[in-house]
View 1 (cartoon, one colour):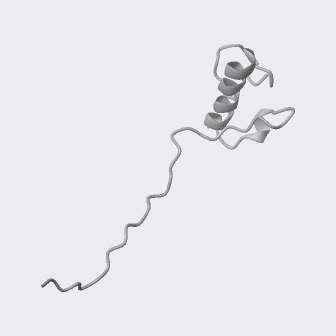
View 2: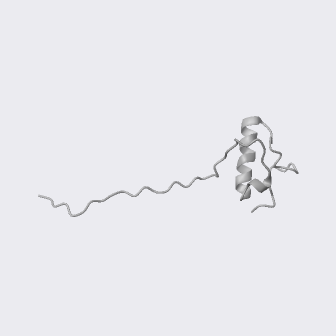
Length: 71
């Protein structure tokens, strides 16, 4: 016979997104709406994918990198 000493429970790992979540529910975005450049870049890329253009005009100089003043 086996004696059960303790119960082992699995601890779920916290989900860590590989990319920032993108929410396009706002009518307008500007660089002050984002904490990081990666967040702004994700919104920019999502708008390109959905609408085929930079609908929020986050890339002022047209180089494909938005809100360059953010880190």
